[in-house]
Length: 247
Length: 119
Length: 81
Image (cartoon, rainbow over all chains, first blue to last red; front, side, top):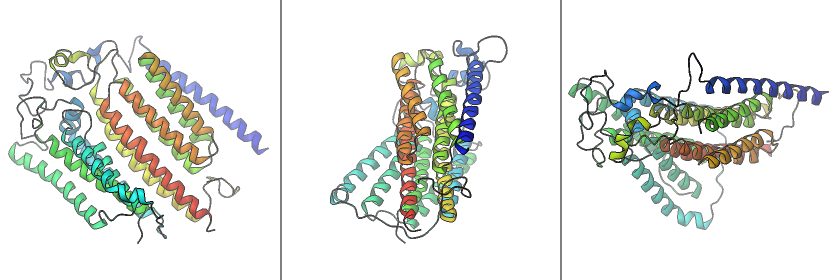
């Protein structure tokens, strides 16, 4: 009886979901009259076309390449994340902080057992940790020139902490993580207030670089990415300590 | 190419929805939610794809001359932050699942009438 | 290019179906990791290398690790009660 009922529910769910999938696919592919979700053939219709043309204000803008603070980064995604939408990114990091805080409150805290690591993992863990830290640092320093950025850099740095936890080595403790996270979070807003004092606009990039493609052409973008990377790394390392730490 | 991208992401979304609606194990429901999230991210990026587009990175004079052919960078920036938020919410949901296992001694969502769902 | 996209889309669809339909949770977690990795290749084909790197590091690496940690913690508590 129960199996028949669950089979019936499965078949009904399959039918409804396939109908919805067909309808949404039909709408999103449609190129007829009316509102179009995608128009991939004529690029003039896109939302971000004016962002690509670098004339955000109006059609007759006088902004050119490497004269404003906005277009000194060669990677346009980076200049959107860290220049145009920096409020979004900052509050997103705060959302991540709140979820990790709730994680630490809710997780049941009974005895946490550490399995004894093998000799190979114990001996090789410093080399792996140094490699991970090098890759993470490269990613957030070159975030405005090449793909990468603060968030994967933070994840890779936290992976170094994870290797240390799994190998049973003492790397950092809770207090260091708290201090790093607080300093990174405060200094993001501190730089924002400083740019408000200097330029008059909150989160304005006041160190204008000279030429697209140079290492130090990003202005404040590598600074913000480094702060975001350390904040994300500290928050993600907190998760591993909650799972595998004896206390 | 655009049809392939939209079809594959929509298939992921609806397979995940099927899993959320019909499974009973909490961990598998969370895995299905993660599949939905991956599909939605792919759908957002696929809406900004241009046929024969190039990456939105200024590498040389050729890429500056072809600014029209670049794919839309705004959905990519949105998805970049969306992935990180997805990790945080997944961690919170997993801690809730562990607390549920602690109190109910089962990870089925119908813990009252059936006991033995495999971990 | 086109054939590669179709091949990866097929792998993703079959992996997602296998993840939903299998009974073993550990298999489901590992195959979800494979699906996530394939989606990062798909982001690379969509000319979005930033999102591809982030997905490969966070969505495929750390999320799978979190699921495996949770699985181990639930499994070792099963013996106590």
